[in-house]
Image 1 (cartoon, rainbow, N blue to C red):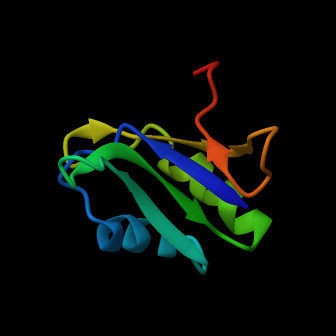
Image 2 (image 1 turned 90 degrees about the vertical axis):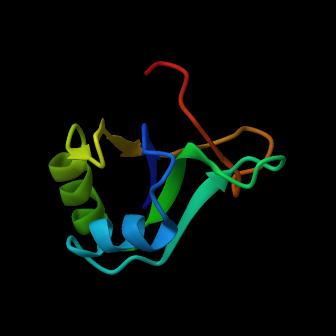
Length: 93
């Protein structure tokens, strides 16, 4: 299950994000979305946890947690209509 993680501190690294979610199960992939001009984090990223039970536990536990001074938001990522392999932020948050 692919999760969208929002409101991350700009200083958060992929390694820190991966470590945070690995406490709930195996992380298949983890990536921060980076600004092309500055090379810095845009404050959100995606984490993929193959086991749905582990992914749901991570969502429940980590959503609303304060990490590096920011209260993060974690939810299931939704694919865009054009390409199911590309994920987007949901607009209803």
